[in-house]
Length: 363
Image (cartoon, rainbow, N blue to C red; front, side, top):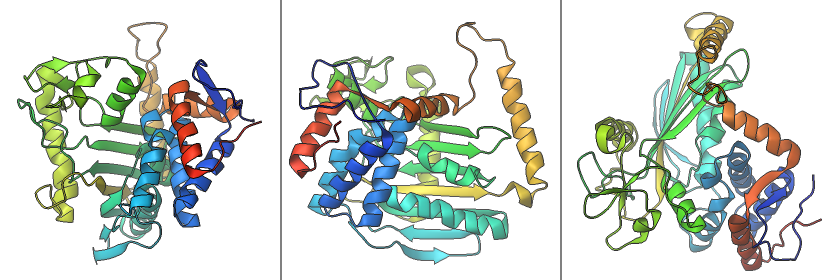
């Protein structure tokens, strides 16, 4: 697959298709040009493009320019290793010291898996990891080894999600993700504990579109779909998962995620530099073999998946899906035909190409 990009402006084109390998190699060159060590740049490019392949557009190359800026201004370390601050048989606390989360996360999953093989479970809490991006892209690292994995992430320097009943923010838009092996495709689940992610609000603003549901709370305390209020002064804030009627559920889940991340890392929002976009992540892996036959667990998981698929859909044209099915379908299609980028995003990548001096791939 080759790119259909050419020197003509892409403004009037609806979609741009390019092979994952071509755009991944280009992104890695851009990151290395900005100072990233080869192994860091490779991991960053790999996991940004992996998000695009799975359809997590707001966590893919849409964030490339941000990552380049972090490398250039020193808010993301270009090389180095994490510091292990404390550890027991099945628990470790790491300080990434502003290494890219795209580089650190696979290492954290690997460390948790090694502990799980010995102890049945392994947990790694990582603080000060710069831009973790989509948690979903790290789940299969564990499920491919027959293990369960759970992840939560919070950003102590960021406040954009209101607690239920408030119109000012305290929480960050914390993602939660799980992965589980089955006899077929693994179950992959990745959601924000706010009504939407900040990246999706930015995407709506860039495309001049409203949000599909009231996910923002204005300074007046009104729920709205108007994404541009996110840029107002004073700005709107994200509503917790559940929205106007059931937001107490999301608010409690946000608190849960921050106790397990910020609390355990001992780096709370009251301590972190305001505006710093470094993440704290909780990664836990469980080895089903510690509880019984590992293949029997897969059989049980597959039975659940099969049963869900037999339920009667509300709309016959929209079959009931299991978490992860949409991402697998999107990845398969884009692996064969190229990743599809909007004209608006492609224009962003054109600007990156100009600023880095690394030309976009073309046929």
